[in-house]
Image (cartoon, rainbow, N blue to C red; front, side, top):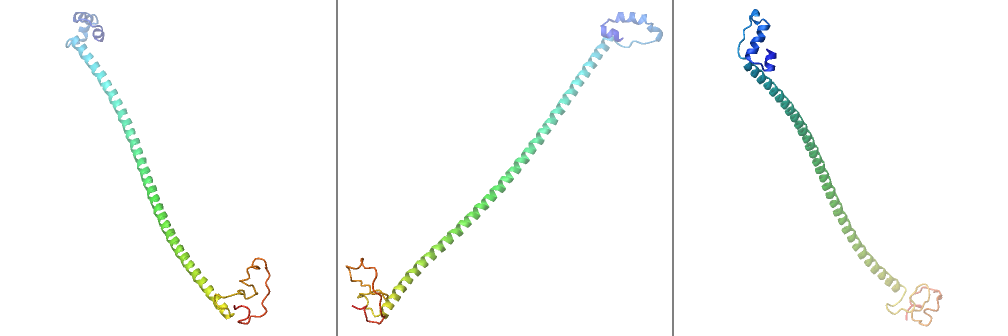
Length: 190
């Protein structure tokens, strides 16, 4: 039978072939047309090929799905890393803003310190001005104690007899005679 279907023999030659192998003795019964069986076998073979191709397609589809899942996993890892990077970037920006805030506080404190320093310098200048007035008053008081009249001094120095009105010896004479006594009214009043 297999020979008949693969060689496409007709029904009469099959009968002859079956007769030669003593088909009747074995009491086989021929059921149906061999061409139909051949077509049925071809259909089954084609169906099996289709199933094989379908299985190959399913295998390829499963490989594609596996690759797609790997891609999605990698994409999720990339998104996770990107989120971590953004979180670190936000932390860096927050730290940078804190640093800027601290820097601004430091500058504000520095400006306050400079303002206080300028106030201190202004007070120091006022103190120096008052000190100079005090020294001038003290020198005036000393001059009055030594017997000089204010504004009319001829011998200003209380240590020597330097004459303030001696114009010709003013830059020539460097050594003036020392005072012998410090009695009021003597040698220092015009």
